[in-house]
Amino acid sequence: MRHLLPSGALALATLCLLGCSGPRDSRTPESAIAVDEAQALADARFRSEPFSDQVRQGVLRQRALFDHHFVPETAQLTRLGERDLAILAEGLRESGGRIALPRGSESEALHAARAATVSSALAARGIAPEQIALETRPASGPGVSTVDALAIRARIATSPMPQLPTASDTSGTGTTPTRNLQ
Image (cartoon, rainbow, N blue to C red):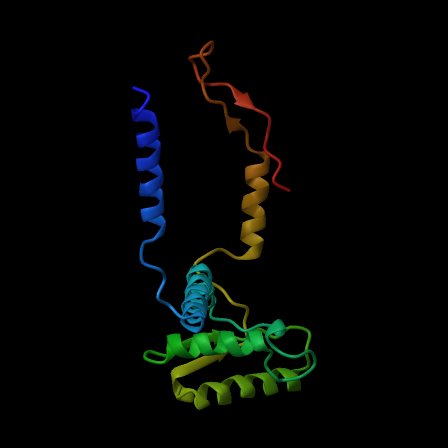
């Protein structure tokens, strides 16, 4: 029995050494760095891609350019304005559509210059002017107007909220205090 322990330890040590003497990484340091850099770029892309898609979908859904898309007091697009306009142009290339360009506090002349900037930028991207309608009214969608939304909120805030039945009350007719959504 005494002879089994040292020979077992010797066999284990031999296996460990054989495991460590396997094939080494054949990559050169330069190729290892290139592979690591490619992996880092792929990882960065996979992290940001879902957010980029969300931004793209939001811009296409909103179809609007606002004051913050332009350099203050100019008709020059900011980087954000350039990006959003490129997304809009890509989305409207085939079928055209409308882009809301609501007039904020800028003068009528500045607003007209901004509209001309948007039209010429779209034309440079291959979008014919007759395909796009630039609207000065606020961006809107299938929702309700602000006045109607405020009235709905006021009505909800003053209406009692039904209480769910508890184990002790099976009638379910009680009410809770009104909701305050203001």
